[in-house]
Image (tube, rainbow, N blue to C red; front, side, top):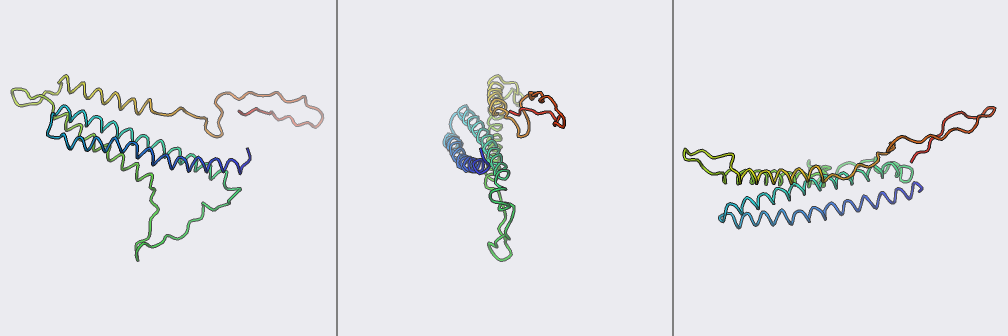
Length: 210
């Protein structure tokens, strides 16, 4: 595959990943928003229902945050390939920055990353649901005769363990498979013996790179 074809493929994949980034965010936001509405509507209802909604909102926002990070990784990955394959084709087009335009006098536009802002927003929502879940878990603890809450309540411990287990599955099992890093081989590189050296022949070793 020539350099121009590689650049075209990288550009298409980069544009596709940006489009998928926002589609995935919209997908997760449906679940997070539904949980938030349900929590507000059912706030005065059964506390057990509230903590289930809080757990669902926490896990949904965590999946949203992790999905945004994964999408951002792929966008950066393809942008690096664009820089690698694009220099012989378009030169230093992406290396030259124009002077920022002033939105108002004395207020220039800044180069904020829209995808990073979305990642931080999903992180904020995740922390918010974590606080809500902690409050619901604390308020659901039974109170002993002396007025102290019983921390080792079986139901509350089970609810906390379920959330921790699923969150751990998201973080650990949700990772993609490791791929071969550019410039590295997956294992020992087979070596091909050099041809018999004749007078003045080159004696350097040759390798087959996968």
